Length: 173
View 1 (cartoon, rainbow, N blue to C red):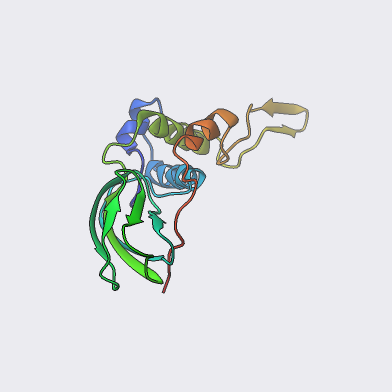
View 2 (cartoon, rainbow, N blue to C red; view 1 turned 90 degrees about the horizontal axis):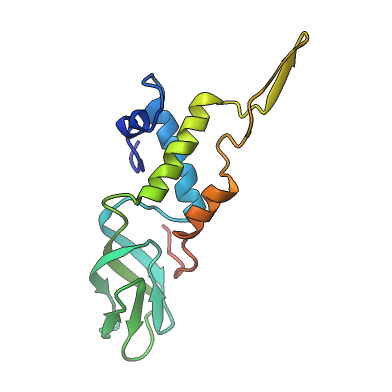
Protein backbone atom coordinates (compact mmCIF):
# COMPACT_ATOMS: atom_id res chain seq x y z
CA UNK A 1 0.00 0.00 0.00
CA UNK A 2 2.48 2.58 -1.19
CA UNK A 3 1.61 6.15 -2.04
CA UNK A 4 -0.44 6.85 1.08
CA UNK A 5 -1.00 10.58 1.51
CA UNK A 6 -1.63 10.12 5.25
CA UNK A 7 -1.01 7.50 7.91
CA UNK A 8 -3.34 5.59 10.23
CA UNK A 9 -1.94 7.68 13.11
CA UNK A 10 -2.87 10.84 11.18
CA UNK A 11 -6.40 9.51 10.75
CA UNK A 12 -6.78 8.74 14.45
CA UNK A 13 -5.38 12.19 15.32
CA UNK A 14 -7.90 13.66 12.86
CA UNK A 15 -10.73 12.12 14.87
CA UNK A 16 -11.07 8.77 13.19
CA UNK A 17 -11.63 5.49 14.98
CA UNK A 18 -8.70 3.31 15.94
CA UNK A 19 -9.88 0.06 14.34
CA UNK A 20 -9.01 -2.37 11.57
CA UNK A 21 -9.41 -1.08 8.04
CA UNK A 22 -7.68 2.28 8.44
CA UNK A 23 -4.87 1.49 6.01
CA UNK A 24 -7.30 0.27 3.36
CA UNK A 25 -9.51 3.36 3.76
CA UNK A 26 -6.42 5.57 3.49
CA UNK A 27 -5.20 3.68 0.40
CA UNK A 28 -8.57 4.15 -1.32
CA UNK A 29 -8.79 7.81 -0.27
CA UNK A 30 -5.20 8.46 -1.39
CA UNK A 31 -6.00 6.91 -4.76
CA UNK A 32 -9.11 9.05 -5.15
CA UNK A 33 -7.17 12.23 -4.36
CA UNK A 34 -4.27 11.35 -6.66
CA UNK A 35 -6.72 10.49 -9.45
CA UNK A 36 -8.43 13.85 -9.00
CA UNK A 37 -5.03 15.54 -9.24
CA UNK A 38 -4.18 13.41 -12.28
CA UNK A 39 -0.77 12.59 -10.91
CA UNK A 40 1.23 10.72 -8.35
CA UNK A 41 1.77 13.14 -5.46
CA UNK A 42 4.20 11.30 -3.18
CA UNK A 43 7.94 11.81 -3.54
CA UNK A 44 9.61 9.56 -6.11
CA UNK A 45 13.40 9.57 -6.34
CA UNK A 46 14.98 8.94 -9.73
CA UNK A 47 11.92 8.10 -11.82
CA UNK A 48 12.83 7.08 -15.37
CA UNK A 49 10.23 8.01 -17.99
CA UNK A 50 10.33 7.82 -21.77
CA UNK A 51 8.50 10.66 -23.47
CA UNK A 52 7.42 11.30 -27.04
CA UNK A 53 9.69 14.00 -28.44
CA UNK A 54 9.72 15.65 -31.85
CA UNK A 55 9.24 19.24 -30.68
CA UNK A 56 11.40 21.79 -28.92
CA UNK A 57 9.81 21.43 -25.47
CA UNK A 58 8.98 18.47 -23.21
CA UNK A 59 6.67 18.70 -20.21
CA UNK A 60 7.42 16.23 -17.45
CA UNK A 61 4.39 14.20 -16.36
CA UNK A 62 4.60 14.51 -12.55
CA UNK A 63 4.83 17.58 -10.32
CA UNK A 64 6.41 19.18 -8.49
CA UNK A 65 9.67 18.41 -10.24
CA UNK A 66 12.45 18.38 -7.65
CA UNK A 67 15.39 17.71 -9.96
CA UNK A 68 16.21 16.55 -13.47
CA UNK A 69 19.11 14.14 -13.15
CA UNK A 70 19.63 12.98 -16.71
CA UNK A 71 18.19 13.37 -20.18
CA UNK A 72 19.12 10.59 -22.58
CA UNK A 73 19.08 12.35 -25.91
CA UNK A 74 20.38 10.21 -28.74
CA UNK A 75 20.80 13.28 -30.95
CA UNK A 76 23.42 14.72 -28.51
CA UNK A 77 21.60 18.01 -28.22
CA UNK A 78 21.73 20.45 -25.38
CA UNK A 79 18.77 21.09 -23.15
CA UNK A 80 17.73 23.20 -20.19
CA UNK A 81 15.24 22.71 -17.39
CA UNK A 82 12.94 25.66 -16.67
CA UNK A 83 12.96 24.97 -12.91
CA UNK A 84 9.32 23.84 -13.00
CA UNK A 85 8.16 21.05 -15.30
CA UNK A 86 9.58 21.82 -18.72
CA UNK A 87 12.65 20.78 -20.65
CA UNK A 88 13.65 22.93 -23.61
CA UNK A 89 15.76 21.73 -26.49
CA UNK A 90 18.38 24.44 -27.12
CA UNK A 91 19.28 23.40 -30.64
CA UNK A 92 16.93 21.71 -33.05
CA UNK A 93 14.15 19.36 -32.04
CA UNK A 94 13.97 16.50 -29.55
CA UNK A 95 14.37 13.03 -31.08
CA UNK A 96 11.25 10.86 -31.46
CA UNK A 97 11.60 9.49 -27.91
CA UNK A 98 13.50 10.93 -24.96
CA UNK A 99 14.30 9.16 -21.69
CA UNK A 100 14.37 11.44 -18.63
CA UNK A 101 15.53 10.54 -15.14
CA UNK A 102 14.05 12.92 -12.59
CA UNK A 103 12.75 13.19 -9.03
CA UNK A 104 9.30 14.55 -8.26
CA UNK A 105 6.48 14.75 -5.75
CA UNK A 106 6.03 15.85 -2.16
CA UNK A 107 8.24 14.47 0.61
CA UNK A 108 5.75 16.09 2.98
CA UNK A 109 2.21 16.02 1.61
CA UNK A 110 0.64 19.51 1.72
CA UNK A 111 -1.81 19.91 4.61
CA UNK A 112 -4.79 20.65 2.38
CA UNK A 113 -4.30 17.47 0.33
CA UNK A 114 -3.76 15.47 3.49
CA UNK A 115 -6.97 16.96 4.92
CA UNK A 116 -8.96 15.91 1.86
CA UNK A 117 -7.48 12.42 2.06
CA UNK A 118 -8.36 12.09 5.76
CA UNK A 119 -11.89 13.40 5.22
CA UNK A 120 -12.54 10.94 2.38
CA UNK A 121 -11.10 8.08 4.47
CA UNK A 122 -13.39 9.01 7.39
CA UNK A 123 -16.41 9.01 5.07
CA UNK A 124 -15.46 5.56 3.85
CA UNK A 125 -15.14 4.27 7.40
CA UNK A 126 -18.37 5.93 8.58
CA UNK A 127 -20.49 5.05 5.57
CA UNK A 128 -18.72 2.49 3.36
CA UNK A 129 -21.79 1.91 1.18
CA UNK A 130 -22.30 5.62 0.54
CA UNK A 131 -25.90 5.47 1.77
CA UNK A 132 -27.75 8.76 1.94
CA UNK A 133 -30.80 7.38 3.69
CA UNK A 134 -32.49 4.10 4.49
CA UNK A 135 -35.87 3.03 5.74
CA UNK A 136 -36.90 -0.27 7.33
CA UNK A 137 -40.35 -1.09 8.76
CA UNK A 138 -41.27 2.45 9.76
CA UNK A 139 -37.76 3.40 10.86
CA UNK A 140 -35.78 5.77 8.69
CA UNK A 141 -32.33 7.28 9.00
CA UNK A 142 -30.65 10.00 6.98
CA UNK A 143 -26.87 10.01 6.88
CA UNK A 144 -26.27 13.32 5.13
CA UNK A 145 -23.87 13.62 2.24
CA UNK A 146 -23.56 10.37 0.35
CA UNK A 147 -20.31 11.37 -1.32
CA UNK A 148 -18.63 8.15 -0.17
CA UNK A 149 -15.50 7.93 -2.25
CA UNK A 150 -16.53 10.77 -4.52
CA UNK A 151 -15.11 14.19 -3.77
CA UNK A 152 -17.27 17.09 -2.70
CA UNK A 153 -17.05 20.40 -4.59
CA UNK A 154 -14.73 21.90 -1.97
CA UNK A 155 -12.49 18.81 -2.01
CA UNK A 156 -12.32 18.97 -5.83
CA UNK A 157 -11.35 22.64 -5.55
CA UNK A 158 -8.38 21.68 -3.37
CA UNK A 159 -7.32 18.96 -5.81
CA UNK A 160 -7.70 21.35 -8.75
CA UNK A 161 -4.83 23.46 -7.36
CA UNK A 162 -2.53 20.43 -7.74
CA UNK A 163 -3.99 19.01 -10.93
CA UNK A 164 -1.64 18.24 -13.76
CA UNK A 165 -2.84 20.26 -16.72
CA UNK A 166 -0.64 18.96 -19.53
CA UNK A 167 2.35 16.73 -20.08
CA UNK A 168 4.33 15.22 -22.90
CA UNK A 169 2.97 11.84 -23.93
CA UNK A 170 4.66 9.00 -22.07
CA UNK A 171 5.75 5.94 -24.03
CA UNK A 172 4.69 2.66 -22.42
CA UNK A 173 6.12 -0.74 -23.10
